[in-house]
Image 1 (tube, rainbow, N blue to C red):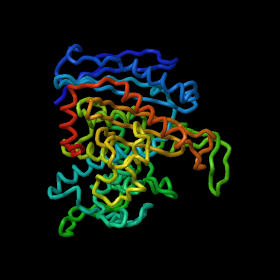
Image 2: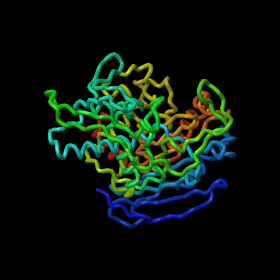
Image 3: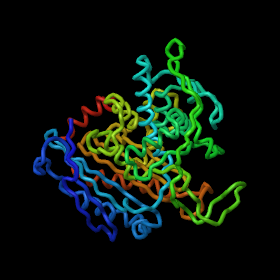
Image 4: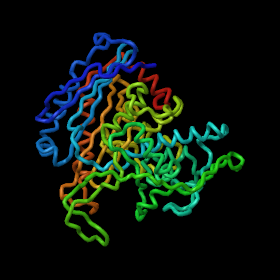
Length: 442
């Protein structure tokens, strides 16, 4: 549908004393900038306006962004007559300041899971994403499992349910199972093949899972509709070198075993890593498959729609028995929505606006990568932001500034972009058709 024209326009500038990099990519088969009219405010100007607006409410953040490792990547989508242009401006994204990725690694894990599923299906044609997968305990750190309890109901441990758990509520155990379905070696070899900058997925989210146990993915069996064995895989162990020569550190001290304070920064060199720009590119590539040739996952158009649908849904839309009080609509929607638990499922805001997103929250680091859409005005853009919200600089003490800084900031950031970007009547019909196709609007 789209043809990607790489490096059509590129320049660097200065914004609030920090380096800002801007890219304009045109999609479709044209090279006339006049054919896709720019919005009234250029992306760099919009970024400047947003940062100026944040300065009054968050002066320390804007004056000392390095203290918070504050970063933004914004891509404006311009549509006219079926043609599309993407313009990206980033704020401090090029600086080598480590932010622990937490759950944003779940998005590439889901995509690589789909790739591995497609490989198996090529030899087992009657395989289905909804088939039960039984994970069998051996030398790894996860117990045997073939069922999942959600609320008061039991579900088969299918790739479908596991993927929905990850995308609905960022479920850690579901991620752990997808990790083992792929195996540590496959995850990291694929990350290298796709040119992720320093990206690595080497850890499950399991307490007391040793470095060696993370290398092990125990055996599994996939069963058919009549409980027949369709596929069996034995235990696999990663022998590759996976620990890069890095010095990722956060904080001034951390709580170790028995709550003992250790007076040195916490070392993240043997943890997962995923850059903000990379997760931004993944999301952009899902919406516009030809827009980024560095992260081209081998999935079908049906799988792509499935992912987009589930990235945008609210917890009650998955058909799973999630408790609506615990998993409120904006449970994992930070940008624009601010994780507001008071916004109920009947709110018009939830119908009009959608956030196709993935989030990560841990050790004081908060990241949200989102494709935000307003179906009524035709506004659409990609926004990824991350910060380190840990004023006391103690890691692992469960005292972070999520509620007082991170969530309000991301809400304000998303709304500032949404309120100041121009409406686009040419995009309304397309976006509404897109929303209906994904069953997000009626």
